[in-house]
Image 1 (cartoon, one colour):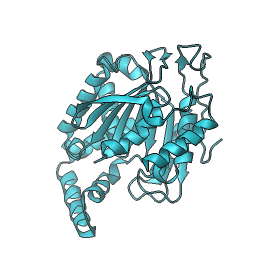
Image 2 (cartoon, helix red, strand yellow):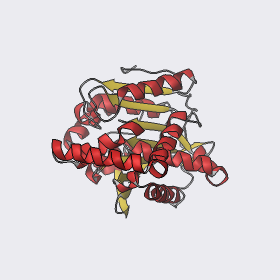
Image 3 (cartoon, helix red, strand yellow):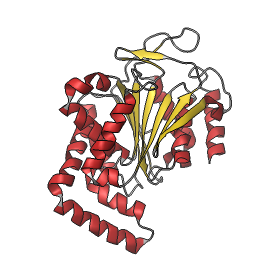
Image 4 (cartoon, helix red, strand yellow):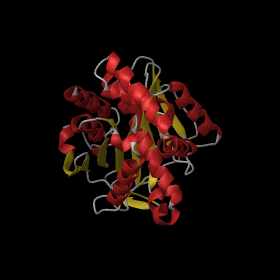
Length: 314
């Protein structure tokens, strides 16, 4: 899969030379190191730097993975960003960081701390969340709303957000049961136990899901967004996603989306790599980033993403 994705990516680059300097081997773009058990920093070797009104340097992708996502899974996505000159803070999520609010809040606090460390500080941020990674991002938004003085500057650094198969609060129990259970019977048992857990601890757990979900949908900072989803996905509800798209469109928030009819949860890149990479690069190219180098990329200020959506590439 990795070699196939590389081959497809290079084919796309051949028709999008304006986006990148050249077409070297994809893996040569990356260096990095492990920050923690489930956190890695991927540094791009492409010497590009951008700036916005609130951040400067290589754009930083905050990648919030799906549950149990392994490093080599997420690195396939990081490769795309690093080849374009973006650094990536690559994070995987475990069940306790979703089910236990105190763990989620501690995890979010750690992410905020990392975003102010040497390799991440002051850089423009693009969020790329998968599945329950959208919930973790919702918790981040809640914290930014609750602590505006402390986190206002960091919030302004977020210039774009991408969500692949985002899970709403009503599908958390089902999604986790599918991920954890090895067969139908164990999945049903886990689903039942999780539902009981969420009912018993409504105030301390379920209400946290609701607040994070509300912050996610509200998108108070009106951040341009790309949504990727499937009608075959039994975990991420396409009706809820399309309802959110309509809400944002009616509110004038720039939103682009791509849907498929036959892809499973967080499997769009695997089945349709050309389409996935193409629309992602299209979205990134429209973000309001200004290049710091006349030699390496565009020097004119990028136009804002138009407030429109698409189920096919433009």
